[in-house]
Image (cartoon, rainbow, N blue to C red; front, side, top):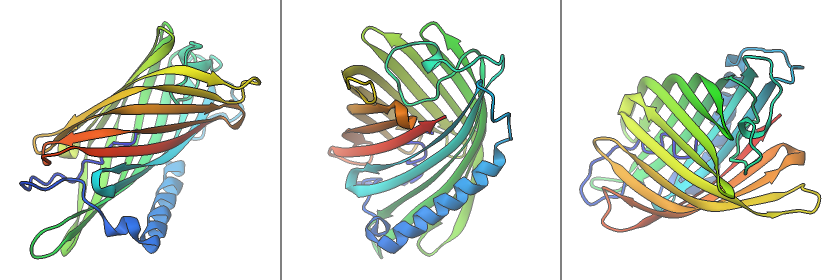
Length: 289
């Protein structure tokens, strides 16, 4: 799951308000610890949901990722994922589906590959207004399975799963939500860099999220222990109650010795519930081995 998944769960249609309002939870250290505890517990459960596959197989790759996204007025979204790629043909992993083009922060795979993963998230924001400011928060869990298919200098992946969440609001009973979860990704070498498109669908709020990036190499250390990639990104998202468009820049940092890929992004946001422009920024840390 990318950073942006389900961050639009706040589907208010209040005239003149911004859907991403400052949350006191984001400024309270105690609440931050509670958040991390929730995510830790959810990731622990997630690990149990992933089947045990031959650990010694060179055709298997384990992954873990996490990060945070801050939207306009400092609303915060935390996410994490654990997953496993397993080659259906026993083919050893090759970088990015067989291409030497820039990484996009995903596992190396070779041949048709089964992808099993569980994603968790926590999102909080405030809605000001009479008679009081309302606190809103969401805890979610998305178990899913899919297939990655190599194409020339790239890959395509399709996943399907279940989207589950609990919604918390001031003076309101906890609401349990459930629906289908669909996800797809397409990666392709193009010119000096590589194009990556990612999209998903959240069934219980009929929400569509799409993200397109193009990354090019800009610097590499003499020992190839660190590589930097830079490029633009565009994001579109929405349902029948809310929509937004975003544009900005992405910085990717590959650290092969740590089996890691760091991503930093940020830019401008314009939504259907705000008259002006806002902003967004985020980071993620992806590890595969």
